[in-house]
Image 1 (cartoon, rainbow, N blue to C red):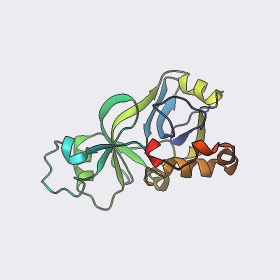
Image 2: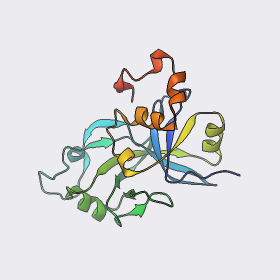
Image 3: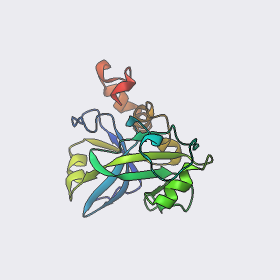
Length: 186
């Protein structure tokens, strides 16, 4: 029986060779018999929100300088992953305080809220039926618990922190060349 991973974190195993997911931490938004949809949490781009958003926001919005994150290799709409209850859809069955929206009115509201932790994402990660299950069986991914503190952690530290939470034995098995000396590989 397949365990569905909606609301969980996928942490790229040190043995995952896919360059799209090297040292990635992916929040699985939905996972069922049809496939899986997720958002990488540690791939900031060089693009600022003010460069791409056309939501009639006044200049100087509190979030103008927020970076857009690349949620995966698949093109998609601008989405906001955040911690404001009731705005959008909860992530997973037990939301752990995480919500997702792509609705323009919701995005506009989030742009003006200083009390919200928000990550804006322009692409996503997708898997077809059985694809993620196969990658899991091959040891490509570790599974972790998602919560707002992990999701909004410094993107340069999130993979290392997530792996540490999965167990010290994984870190011990890494060769020195795979350790965390160069955060630019995130």
